[in-house]
Image (spheres, rainbow, N blue to C red):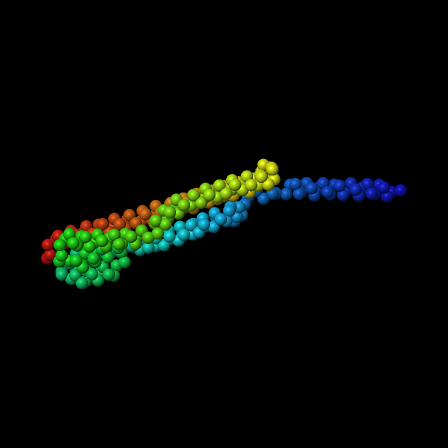
Amino acid sequence: MHFPLLAQITSTELLRDSLAMASKAAAAPVADHLTVWELVSLGSWFIMGPLALMSLVTVYILIERMLALGKASREDKDFMSKIRDYVHEGKVDSAKNLCAQSASPSARMVEKGLQRMGKPAKEIESAMESAGRIELTSLEKGTSLLKLIARLAPMFGFIGTIIGVIKIFYDISLTDNISIAVISTGLYQKMVTSASGLIVGILAFAAFHMVSSMIEKVTDKMERSSLAFMDLMQEPTK
């Protein structure tokens, strides 16, 4: 006689447990963020691959140029004073050796001028200008590629946007449905590629201007050394 009551109690407990489990499942936190890798993977690898390569090239050129230009900008403050003393004392070979020991572009320009000593000032100046152009070309290595990446990366992002829009319309045509679930993949793709293209472009643009600023400082030192050497040639020897 007590079995129906026991069954009813058991059913009530089971129902209560099921409701409790459902409540816990509903209250469980849902992941509301994406990792960087998950976000990048939402983009088209046809676009993200070249953008990743561009970003690596940008970082490499920036680091390499900063190290090279930092080395080129280091120069003995008394360099021209020592050159002046050697020239006035007639120790041209010692002055050339001092230039050879320095790794700065200014020293190589002055060395070229020392090699033309005894010739007309115009010829000396022309030789130093030619050496300066060669040094400047070496200093600017990689900057044209940074400029290209700064312009090209946003274009790749725009191509990714177009591909994402095409995917949206293609998914809609397959399902005949314009719900968020259908178009979300294409939306993610176009937004991720656009943002990535802009980020890489901004990085390359900033790197280009940082490197250009350092080149200008080194070029200024080269011009100062060139003028100081030409003035030295006009000074009377002791």
